[in-house]
Image 1 (tube, rainbow, N blue to C red):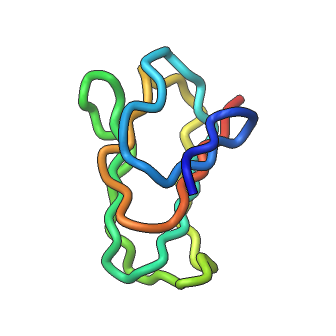
Image 2: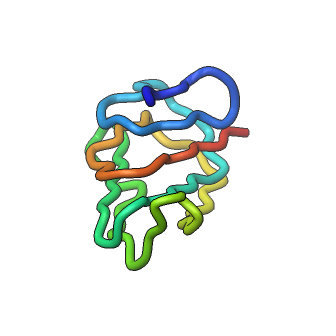
Image 3: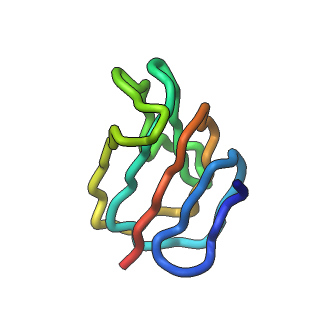
Length: 91
C-alpha cells in the first residue's frame, strides 16, 4: 500500500519527506507487524519527533503505539518504518 496524504489522518507506509511546511500534529499512531520493528519520524531540521522499537507486534496490526503531540512541527519525514502503518492526525 502506498501513502495516503489526503484527508485526516494521513496513512503512511513508506519512508521519505511527507511535508516541508509547518504543520500542527495532534497525534501519531503506529501499528507494527513484527516484534523489533523500528519507527523514526523527524522534522526538516533532523530533530526526532518520534523514535521507537516495537516491543510487541501483531501481523494483523492489532497492537498500537501512540504519541500525542498537540503542537506545530516544522515538516515531517519518515526516516524509518520497518512494517505496519503510521497514522498522523492533524488539527
